[in-house]
Image 1 (cartoon, one colour):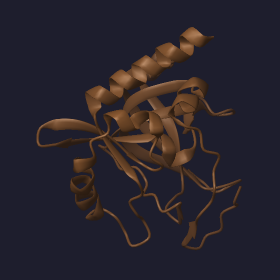
Image 2: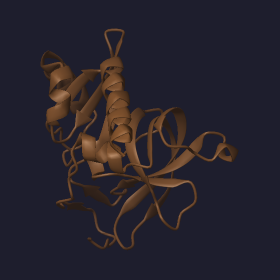
Image 3: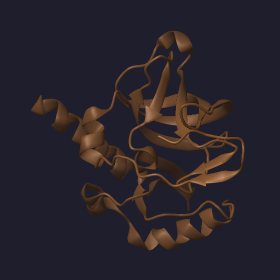
Amino acid sequence: MVACTKTKKEINASIEYYNFEESVEMSDLIAEVEILKKIDEIDEPYCKTLFSASVIKIFKGEIDDNKNKEIIIMQEGNSEWIYNNMRLFEAGEKYILILKKAKGYENTYWIIAGDANIYTIETLDNKEYAIKNSIKDEKLKKIQIEEMESIVKRKWEKKLSKQERIKNIQVMEKESFENELIATIKEKSDEK
């Protein structure tokens, strides 16, 4: 892990990658969320930003109902550090996230394999899409829509700073992605 200092820098770190099926299997919570606001930053032992998020839909796991369907999500990086060229979440954005419970924190989750399990929800031409901006996953290739990749890249490039970048995106219709996610959750559950 990399400790943070108070200078504007980039962190390029290799993280342990888990493919889609492995991530689904090891997750504690898989949910569609809307980011509400940034609530804090952590510098030690490494940089993270904490976001409050409203849970829209749960695919796997449970949350504490006493928290009004809100959870806290840890994302790598903070206002001083850009982690693996990824931009931080912003209020109002929606994602499907594959999460693990954070030990020592109440109602808080971290994203398994960092940006590899962030699926941005975007509406384009009145259709909802789930977009992965990381390593393309072999299992998801059968539902990806390659012709939408350049459209998404052009739209996203307008939001990015010089330090942030678009990686190998995978664009899928949201409904198709949800169906694949549900089928994989069931398949992994049946294997146990």
